[in-house]
Length: 286
Image (cartoon, rainbow, N blue to C red; front, side, top):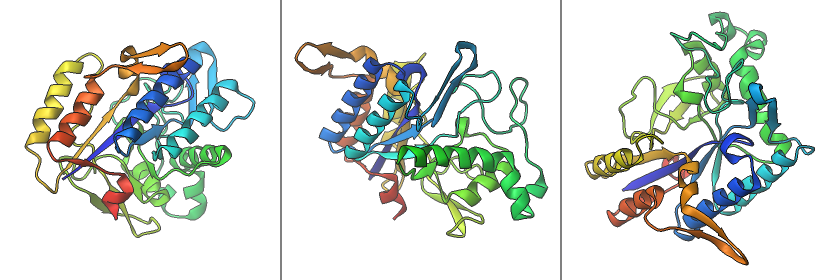
């Protein structure tokens, strides 16, 4: 029985801008590594907050925040982390990274990302000129500038138009999100696409996530739902690591003290005590 965990919305800004917050993130990575828990990090390559004038790209060697952030990501990789692109900026217009949307979706009323036309799928020139391809290319380029290799892609808020999703699928064969054609499936699924493998695989997070405004309720919900999962179902969820920060305390001349029985630790311990083994996304695909 397999389980997966993804640390969500991790970028060079916001909750993870300061050296202290990045040290706390490393404490979480250390815990997962020491307990043999492969983990995934949904990286926002460029963090933008227009109101505060913040624009930090992870590959910028002249930005102190970005340099520290990149050092942290490299340490994650040493701990066995799998990194993925969570959009490029995870925002559009005047919205803030991690909060805003990046690709087109029905019902948008403010800071609405542009749509791509059906013609974007007809020729390579139009494909490369599309908004969705440009955002993917910029995200991948930021990883390259940082000397890192992303292994998967996740659309911000799981939202993209049908045309844009086809463009993203053509660029990337592995999506770490639920298949829009089969959103309730608890196993790996695929969609026919023009990716290098002829199809694009979707690895779901069917257990959802822990909402910061309902932590206890969601921890208990995930625990209770996972009990009913079959042996071939993926007990897959994502977690915003800043929720652990109140439980991590700095000490002089010692490693940070990380309390027991935190929301994340309870989820990890419940999964493993009930016979589930945490695996990497590559292990699931292979």
